Image (cartoon, rainbow, N blue to C red; front, top):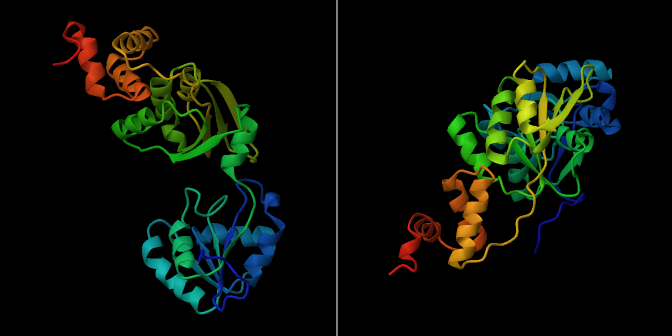
Length: 292
């Protein structure tokens, strides 16, 4: 029988509480009430939580514990035990919704596994806010989180989603924004439309829109603050025929548009539904077709 969250459960309740991504007056009305009501408040940064409590002009009488990437694995069983003992645990992260590129997933999964009800205080989200103000298509989108820090891993990740047709949303550190945009320009094309959303809802909020290559040049001057990148998806690509003439023509067209031959062969093979080796052999030795 499918698992459900029930208010009749003898266990406690896990509350994922969204916090402001900038302005404190964007805090959802229920946030203060949940913090006051909590038996335990688990915070990604207890100092930031203390400041938030002060700005909200409230006190949280429950136990305050830290819950961040470094102690998430060890602290999850402790919080689960509190939930199983019937306590109400409120989880907050530095900004936005817990578990979205922030601590929370492990605790939610553990609570669900033990039939502990999980609910949320909805509120600010950098993902949706950036998407809404980007000016890019919003009917279909996906969240890609942070890109790998190492250049090689980042390039491989971007190559794997180069054909993604949905608008993509990324988080990025300010000091890596230029490198990320240049890697995207190489993988997706310099003219692919994008938006750099910086310091959303804060005093120095800025949204810069343009092609990826143009934005990379802009970012070379230095970027500050919290950064969310929104990139439009790839244009839909028609399927490629699997006959030799269609395969050769598709590779030639891709190369003419500036795609390296190796990448063109891989993509054409994917679109045609044939092994990459077949396309490779055909391109490099067409006279040997068909293979023995």
